Image (tube, one colour):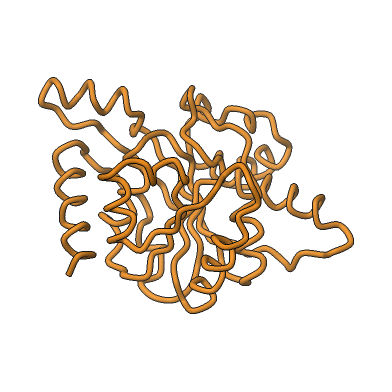
Length: 222
């Protein structure tokens, strides 16, 4: 009951603040284990998942700092989210996420780990690369624009909804991780994920991946 109440509140927030335009949402399976990786512009980003997907088994990793916020803490608990320490190796959070992913859950993660201060992509971390490769699940890249906190608030003050555009890309999988070249493999996997996200958003949002060779390959082949 608490989950559905929290989700209803999220739907209300999204309806009041956003005009959604989501492309290729039907690519996302309605059941089964997979991962979603997206860029991170604003606080509304994680809420969109609960608005768009009718699933009870969403695995959301949330920065530990939000545990100090009463409202955020309540939402995370009702939605069965996992608090994670972004600055230390949080093995507890990783084990829990991996267990739930292997049990058929849907992992949602922003590889950047935090909201981009400029709106453009910043360097991704290896968390989703590790989890997706370890569990052997497909990854669906998602590109989002229009959710920057400042822009959403400015529209809301004028009693307008911000135009939010999301694009779901083609799924792909990552091979297992070799112990002999673990760091190099994770670096390459994260680059692959970030470039696939970058290919779904306008050039001005591509940030540190704008000139990445893999992004050029993806754009030329698409």
